[in-house]
Image 1 (cartoon, helix red, strand yellow):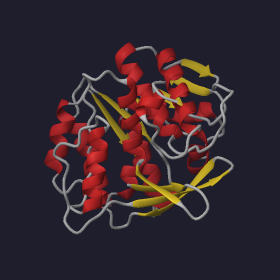
Image 2 (spheres, helix red, strand yellow):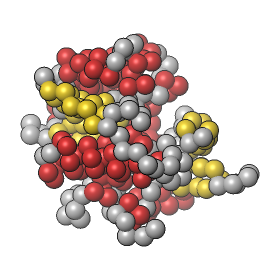
Image 3 (cartoon, helix red, strand yellow):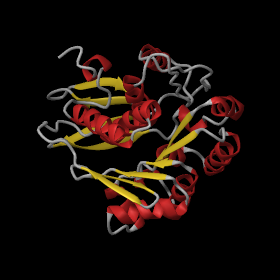
Image 4 (cartoon, helix red, strand yellow):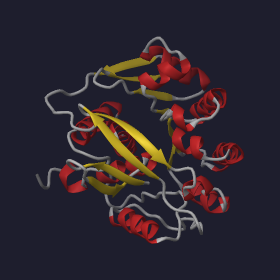
Length: 295
């Protein structure tokens, strides 16, 4: 999507971002260069879509075989900030991304060879119901037996017309996934969870193998079968903009887990990444800055 973030009185800074792109951006920052990171959506054939694809590719994220939809354009959102906490206004009803399954065989071929597949609940929210259903069935049928499916519910109630349908799809995707990244405040509002443990237990009972519950400035909970581990969130950094805090956590966590297999190292890397992200404006922090190569 096109992102507009505050840049002073009456001024806006234009960039590109979006939940799945954000996650891949931070996974790319943590992974070695020999790992392929690939993004799948659909874009228009307009100049802004072309600029967006160039921007993503320049960051080392492949957009190969991305469906191009004539007469469609990228969605747009504006970030509003109140003491660092963000809220969004969206213009995405006619975005090309809603038609990403128009040529579904392109997606299935990518999924069939992937070692890690990442899915967001926002993708399920913006797709027509028949396409959302087809996406879940297609992933379940075509993902490799030894591949990891990671799912972030990313619950945005304003994107869903039917709360019951939302809970149904989120639960099904969570039950399919090996790793789920719920945010407790969203789960509490939408599913009535009374604690972070209740959120973790619900996804484990649905079939998830590991649940990583994000809880703002409170400790992160990792639940894996009968094991429960809490990891305090680092302190000592200024919160400027919480946009992409959860996305950056998920991307860094998956990248570190894929390369080390260590939950502790993965959480620590993810928390450090998210801390850097919320200390800066906008969703995407330059990779060099994340790696400490510039200040």
